[in-house]
Image (cartoon, helix red, strand yellow):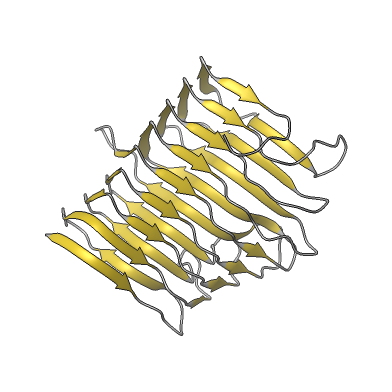
Amino acid sequence: ILVLGVVDQPMDVGGGVAMDIAAGAMPQISDCRLLGGSGASTWAGIPGSSGVLIEDASPSLQRCHIAGGDGTSTVDATPGSIGVDVHKSSDPVIEDCFVDGGSGEHDGTTGSALGSVAIWWETLPLETVGGIIQHTSLYGGTGTVFGKGGTGASALRFVDGNLMVTASTIDAGAPVRTTQVSHGEGIWIAGSNDSVVIIERSRIYGGALSGDNAMTRAVGLFGSGVYLLRNNLIYGGNKEFAWGSDSGARAMRIGGGAFDAYVVYNTIYAAAHASP
């Protein structure tokens, strides 16, 4: 299947998806604009809007502009908008694309709110290499969180599976500041024992935001998977660091459960800085 053109699917009630790639499909998708439109989600795991939804499929996306739209969510840990939403036993190849998380909004009851996410990756670990992202720009978007606050925008949220990212730009985006905490995060990884993530020759940026009581972070490694970060430029973001508060730029955090994290030949810069 070769898809050329513009797809825009606004919806009034939850889960607005521009393109849904179903189980077993192996389409070749190139030179498209895929725009998530609008929607309002009230179900766990279903964002208000998304550009592409991939479930048990093996698509190839090349030279596409994908945006998550401006959906909303009230479910904790479920974003308002997602650019590319990857699930189950999927192993897509995303190459030479621009993926924007959109401008989703989240109004949750805990601090786990997520406004917009460029790529959400939650697949089953595979015996093969899994998915590949290369020569691609990920931009978390301009998400907003209300309620108890949380992460306004994130470029890559990895929950489980296998993934290789090479020669790409990963930028948390510019989350919109509200009266609540609204963090920016380039990469958040929390895989299981069987997960493998390799990120190399890429630029990773924690995002740009304004206001107090907010943090930008380029990389967060959690969970018990195997993680390799090699030959990357890693910048914490634009926030000045302040000890004893939730404000500041943090280039990388490695959680206590990350037993197999390997960080090799990287430039890691914590101080406030513009996007590399």
